[in-house]
Structure formats: C-alpha cells, structure tokens
Length: 272
Image (cartoon, rainbow, N blue to C red; front, side):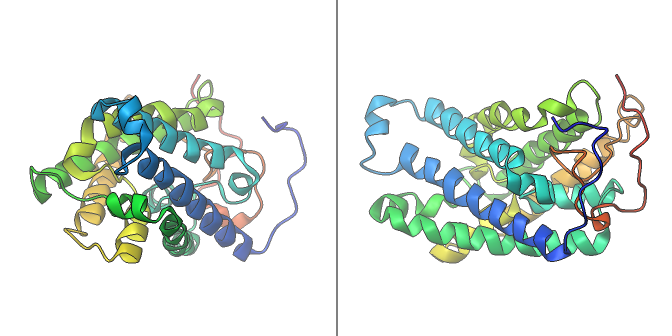
C-alpha cells in the first residue's frame, strides 16, 4: 500500500481519468467474459472436466471478480480508481466523493470500453457465438425475476464495497472482495439474470452481438440495487462508514482534484 505520508502526485489531465476507465472496463469485459466463454461454450473441454453447471458458475464468478480486483491493483486502477462499472461511479457520486461531471465522464468511458471489450470476444469465433458473447439475459423465470435478482446482487456489491472502503482495517483488502463475492453471486443468481450488476458489462455484448432480449433488465435492476444499497448504508450501524476518495485501491495516489465531490475527507479517521 502506498505510504500515506508520501507527497501527492502531480495533477493529470482529466482525459487520463476517462481513458483509464475506458481501458479498465475494456479489460474487464474482454478478460472476464472470456472466462464465461471458456467455462460454458459448446465444445469447451471444461464442460467435461467440470460437468456441474453450478460449480462452473462459481468458478466463472470467481475469475470474473478476480479480473476486476486485478484491474483495481494495476496502474490503470491507480489513475482512475478502477470503478469499471457505472453503478460504482454513481455510488461514489451519491456518497459525495466524486464530482458529478466526472461521474458522467466515467460512465461514458465505461460504456465505450465495454463495447470495445465485447468486440474482442468475436475472436473466440463459434465458442463465443454459442454463449451469445457472454450476454446477460433473463432465465426461464422471466424478466421481472431477473430484475429482482439484479437488485439483490447489486445491493450486495454496493454494501460490500462501501463497508470495505469505509473500514480502516478492511479497506486495503477491497480488491480481494470481488472474487469471492462474484463467485457467490454468479453461483446463486446467474440462473435468473446472468448476473450483471454492471450495465456497461451487459451493454457491450448486447450491442456487439445484437442481443436485445429484455435489455432494460440490466439497467433497471442494477440502478434499483444501487438505490437500495445506498439506503442500507444510511442505517445507524453503517452510516458512520465514510470513504476518503473515489477509489477502490491506491487511496493516497490522487491524480486530480476532480475525483472529489462535495466533501473532501482525507483527514477523517475511518472506523476501526
């Protein structure tokens, strides 16, 4: 972890923040969704090696979450904070640590990055086609069950993320949250919606693959889950948890004042 007493890094142009978010989301979709392809594509040897679909869902979620955590630890995450998800950027904005204009730029960059990342999945050829480019679509229970699943999964993401970030003893381990969290979420919730929790991650394969089956689920569900998660964080036992900066890691490497929103709290001590 970076030395808290180290001098702040010189400011970077705001475009570097957006470029970092674009690249980070591209990597999340390109690498993370490639695990979906390998784990579930027709003809993949992993299906024979691990015939249990539930076990493969858990493995896929773990690898997808590990990809996100690795991006947070990387130089890409150092620059922009590795939100790589519109839900995360909007949550930081509502928590007051990300300026509104920057939040809009982050979301736009994430959507572009997800589309570019989904385009790389075409390199898998028939394997990618057999799993619809890893698109997230409602299961047999229908779109409204998928919405409820997305609400629950995204709520878990938002609450878990900010509990880690707002707790002094946990915040350094925040990138490590995502692998076990998504292993559980994909294992239990993917049969309902495919487990998105990330509108950008779902938009990329939908746009590149021309797959618009109940596309609104991956916006309505995560955004409702965001609202519910933020409401839960206002409960008395959680309301004292406050993050310092809109980052998942590299907390003391703050490249630009625009990362901050209405309230800068670098001197506030986090709960122990």
